[in-house]
Every structure is written in structure tokens, then in C-alpha cells.
Length: 360
Ligand SMILES: [Fe+2]
Ligand SMILES: [Fe+2]
Ligand SMILES: [Fe+2]
Ligand SMILES: [Fe+2]
Image 1 (spheres, rainbow, N blue to C red):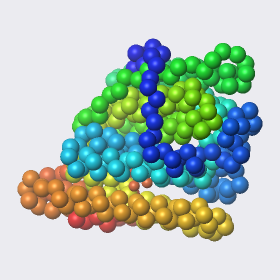
Image 2: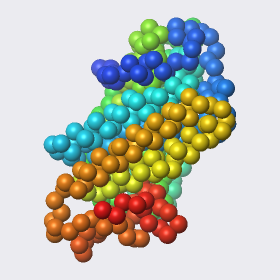
Image 3: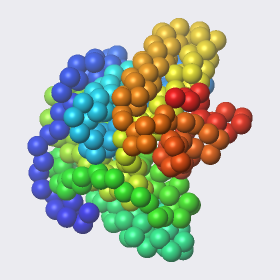
Image 4: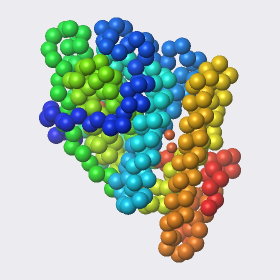
């Protein structure tokens, strides 16, 4: 983690098929207008829809990071399935919600938002998590939180320097921080529940930071600000490939194929049946038809994801030849538990404690 602060220059991580994101990320009239004040994100939206879009961006960015982690521990067609689905969560779903929300503004607005986010992580969130982990006896987690807090301080300084340059206050936009990519592996966590919950919060923050910075990077590129674009893309890489990946390994995010598929099916089904239909309904009631349609279409996509994952699950050969069952305590097949109620994904449960209707 400390080596990440050497300032080594990175190759820019492009989004590849990012045309959709480019088209949607900048509010009308802001492209090339970096000196103008950016409209506040979520402007002209009902309060409920703005909140729903923010939550949706959080969910989609985390789904991307989680499926990318699952991809790293899978092989063959299943790895390809995780990769394809992850890309869709980021490049379509997150990008569409970010566009509807007006997430990306001018470079000035985006850098200001990035400085604020990094400041929160370095002075508040990670120090608090480090203290609480130490108090719980989770020294490894405490050290990791402290190391990442130092990285975030460096990110804040880089973004602040870039902001000064963009504002005409002197200096140049700095090179991005160097990243030391960490491979996600299958692990079982031994952390105390509260530490694990904090770790989950941190992982959501890192996933969202990654997606936001990639969006800001695309906006900067569209503005012709290549150095700002590189700074955001390089920092995004640290957030995902170093911070999120290290935290995911400590949290035991990635399990076996069956466990990962079951977690994913639970999340997709909740989005398809509850989260996005509710958000669509609220948007329609507020007269926001286009955004209502976006939520409805995304619910349809998530339903297809759930069905595809369920199909993949059925194709896995269970060691004892029995079907996977869902009970009130978790998932199991035969006499062996596959996956308890997961403190990481917190899969949706109905009033009886069952996971949503996936008794396979
Ligand atoms: Fe999605
Ligand atoms: Fe950061
Ligand atoms: Fe981070
Ligand atoms: Fe999905």
C-alpha cells in the first residue's frame, strides 16, 4: 500500500466500449466549459428519484467490483460470464444512472467532489474503522485501514493540486498514483462482525470511487483535458485493483462457484423484483417518465442476469449429486452447508428469513 504513493506514472485504463458513458455523463452545456460552475448533480430531479439514482449507482458499482472479483477466481465459461455481467453493470447500468443523475460536471466540479470524498476517507472513515478494528482485536484489518487512509491522503493531495492548476492557480496537473494490483483469491474471513461490516462499507466506497473516477476521467477526456483524465483513471485503478481487492481478500468476498452464484442470484433478484420496480414507480409518480423507464428496463436486465446465473448454477455438478436447497438459515446441498446468510452481500430476505424464492 505504501508503495502506491511513489507517483509512478500509469498507463490510462480506458473503459473500452465507453461510448454510452461518454454520451451520458456530461450534463448538457458543460462539455468544454471547465471554467463554468457545474450544475449540482441531481438537479431538477425529485428528492426521491435523486436518492434512488444515488443508491442505484452504489449498487451497480459494487456489483461490477464484486463480479470482477468473482471473475478472478473462476475459470472458463463461468469466468467469461462474470466478466460480461460485470461490464454491463458498469458500462451500461452505472453509466445510465450517472447520466440521469448528472454525476459528471466540469473538471473543476469533479475534482472538488473527489477532494471532498478523499478527505472524508482519510480523516474520518478509515481512521474510525482502524480504531474500531484495533479495539476488537482485528489488528490486520486495523493496519490495512491505516495504510489505505494514507493512500487516500495522497489522492486528496493530488486532486487538490490538479484543482489548483485547473483553476489557474499555478502548477500542473500531477501524474496519477502508481497502483500495485492485488489478485483476488478465495478466502474465509475470521474478522469480528463489526469489523466485517466496516470493511463492507469501505468496499462499497472503493467500488463507487472507482466507477465515479472512471466517469470523471471520461468527462475530462471529452473536455480535452488529458492529464486530468489520466489522473482520474489512474486513481480509479488504485481504488479497485489495490484497495477494493485487498479488502475483498480480507473480507472473504470470493467463495466457490456455487456460493458466488447464489450470492449473485440473491442480489440480482432483489434488484429485479424490489429495488428497481419500486424506484420506477416512484419516478413515474413524480412525473419523471424517462427515468422511470430506465429503472424498469434495468429491472428487466437484472432479471435476465438472475436467470442466467441460475442456469449456470444448475449446470454445476454437485459433489453429492443433490440439488441446492434454500432454507431459513442459508443455502445447502445434501448435508453440507454451502453458504450461510452472507454478512457481505446481505442477500434480500422476506419476512420469514428466507432468501428470495430461489429454491432450486
Ligand atoms: Fe445492474
Ligand atoms: Fe482514493
Ligand atoms: Fe481507496
Ligand atoms: Fe445485474
